[in-house]
Length: 179
Image (tube, rainbow, N blue to C red; front, side):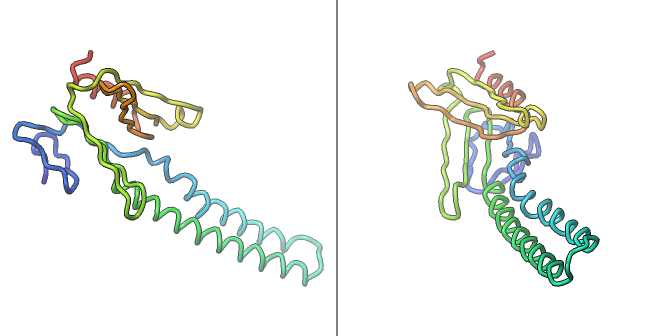
């Protein structure tokens, strides 16, 4: 199903009410792929670069060959583990959505292969919206958490690691008529 107003493809399983419009659909920031990308590409690159420099050392031939073989094995293992981690993270990321509609907030968070959490609340239940950007990397790359306080005392909806958290906060506040 597609929302005609904003051109957003609505995730499977979400049905909008008669007059409901999607105002914002977002996902987690690309930063969530950092660790698996480092493991998959950066570490093997460094190890393979070291292979070229080991040849220049004045060490016995048998030691150079063993070190090179060890570095190649470690680089292969890093690449394999990183690729598995990357594709696992991609699976979770592709099935995690944060939607703001004209009537409610919908959070669909894929937690594992067979574990999914879906939470939603009407905009009238929202009491407060807080955007948090914690740390240097979050500030540099522009991601953070948006915490939505619901009328229940400890109930919160958390848009975790979203890009442009202050923009997301403003959209939620505007739709909930808090500003």
